[in-house]
Amino acid sequence: MSVLTVRLTSLVSFFRATIPSFSMDMNSNDRAWLVRTNLHYLLLFSSMDLMNINNNIIHFDSKKACHAVYIHVYGQDLLIRAEYLINKLNQLIGFDPPISKIVQIIFFLSPSLVTNYNQNSYQPSEKTICHIMELQEQYINILWSYLIYRYGEIEGHKFLMSIIGQLLEHQKFGADVDKSLLERQPFANLVYTMLMSFSLN
Image (cartoon, rainbow, N blue to C red; front, side):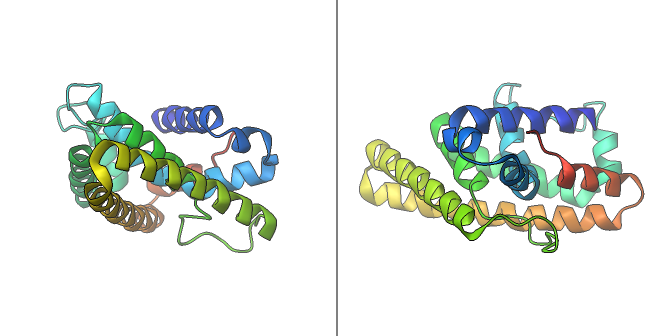
């Protein structure tokens, strides 16, 4: 739980520092909503970043002491799938940190990545949703400009399509993780509750 809290806190700090509108234009309820519905779907990106500063070793590597805990909470199948997605992501954008950071911002500025979010819970206003989507579009344009600059229009377009494919895989994985955590008792459900209630205002 402590490790997850540190990683989630680090991600929130990154978004506070890089998205001025997140820090200054949104009220605390809207910020908390974005964090609850999107943040834990970005943990694979965070894992890739950790891998790149730890000699290409994934933080839940079988040789590490925390591996048994991850197996207990998530199960072997999800860990194998997570490792596959992290390595796939690393092969695509791990060599180019600006792409990774911009994509994480775009991913975060999505109106609810969580597919099983309780619609009776807090919902931002339509105006706020439109504002978030406008912000997301700005960062998509930044990403597109960067890809054209680095790779040219044709290769940049192919790269963008590959990134979109990866994002969809990550969202599907996140939904499957949520489902698994709800079914695996009792500790996994505690992790899920923490992920869905975490927010810093």
